[in-house]
Length: 559
Image (cartoon, rainbow, N blue to C red):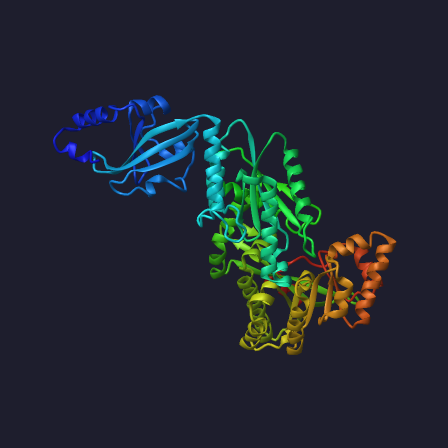
């Protein structure tokens, strides 16, 4: 049909009247939709009677109450001069509508579609038949809608269907994200094929729980999602506990631990993918926490995400503009209170936000991998200053720098360090390397091989945060290090009681028997100092002696 030809013979007003007469000649409701913008260009009288005047609105927003075009949008499948017939449930019409679509040229030259309502069924049988057809489509494993590994809906289908379902204003809805804790370990230890079996098992639990409701999907990797209606928040927790119990009762020879994030749907206009992101933010707050298995989304998570985004936006520029500053915290021998070393700490001097403390950016950099660049920058700053002090004839104490897990896993650590040592003509014993205790929980044999090679090159190795983990006693027996640093929390909690003091005394004693040097960090009181001296601890670091300070201030007390 070509309404453009009418315009050649008539003026605009006459054209509209002719088209209106043609489309109102029958008893069927008709609408004209712009094929590219999805704008409703025209409705005949019957269409206005059924759905109100929607001219100028977007068809999927009107008919499907969706912000984005439908996955199976008929306008993407119409061929020129060949009508297409589709049956679908229309929320606006409260029934199953059968539409016939024609490709047309609108009178103003736009490509358009004429949609004519052939039939409208509002009885329960027709609605149920349509739902069954949708279930059959799911079982047909349509590539665009079904996750190939598990056979359940993928994220695209979930977003599409959930956006429609949650528009039911009579119910409260929650989006719940399900994540398998330490799934990477399952793949690493038992193999990817085994990991795939775990994913299929979790999908099967969701299928058995929800059947053909199509309210669940695999988002990606080891993350699944479902939505549910609720009256009270406690109902969501009970649903989660039910799923956790089913998943824990599995055929595998190891536990499958699941964590959940919950987003309560308040604003139904937000795209479902953003709702899932918010549920994921909530889940991340309990990941790695053995005491919690779920959390509700809070708006401050979003604020943190926006703040993190701003930090990530500025981080590269800050590196090139040398906004990251090296601070040094001195270390003192307890036997004579003499300065014997310093630890490198990073502060960010932002041109607009001022001094940003490390807790605001270091954890983020550890997550996004930027810590690799920042660490290497701080290593070079340390080497550069050591070289300057040597050139000035200063008596230089060893400087300790931090090594992150990313350098162990993703970088040639030995090469990077030795290049700096040669560049500034230093010896490795001038640069001590601090490795956090938690690193030894992940592939300790591989880590120990790296540390052994570094020791042989002449670097002194320190274990930071000693006593914060569960493997401390095995750690000092098995690893290739020179020094342990007793964690402040370990010190505070243990020396508060007589039994605790015995634990710390014996820990220091065992370390000394193994020829390890002992540093206590976070030393803040005279009681700390007296106890550590009586326990034969070698070195102390903390506010009692000196806070972290800029290089010029350190130089004033060191030289």
